[in-house]
Length: 102
Image 1 (tube, rainbow, N blue to C red):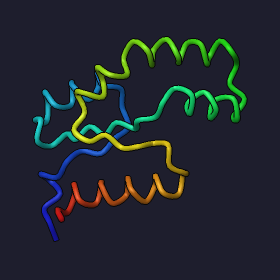
Image 2: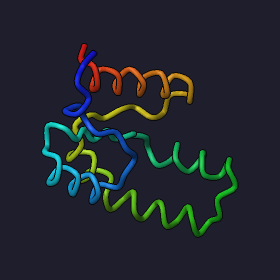
Image 3: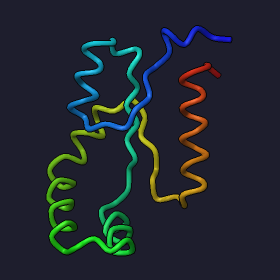
């Protein structure tokens, strides 16, 4: 079994937190994964779960401002337009590869 003391860290975080973790633990241990989807897909999902127009507008503004910048700072970009099952399986494989190697 691989020594997990030196394995990549796994967490869900904003890019600011990812950058802080990279400074503390090193760039090689912190792998940033970006879930990429056009805003239209995000908006459909938000409406389906009942988010308000204000929440959707706020998310749109943040997405327009930061999408490309954040995506470029991530190590892995994943197409998040897939259904949940496919996306969870893909992310699971990515995480296992990061932890245990290929």
